[in-house]
Image (tube, rainbow, N blue to C red; front, side, top):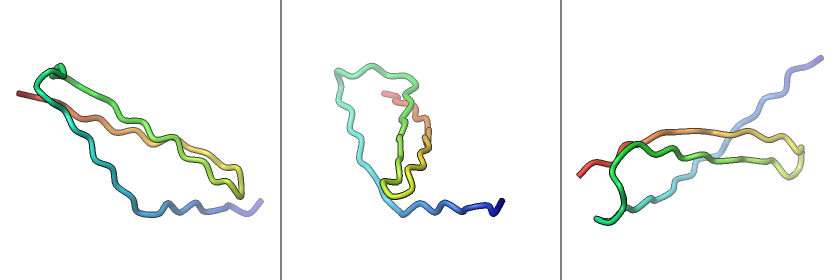
Length: 51
């Protein structure tokens, strides 16, 4: 079987926190699905909010 490659395009997002949001560890999950092939994957990153 021939292996198929998956190439993701460049993108970005902005996340904002204010003084009422709790400090600590957060996890951001992006669920990505190609509408043509139907292939899907999840990309996960973590961030820490401090004062």
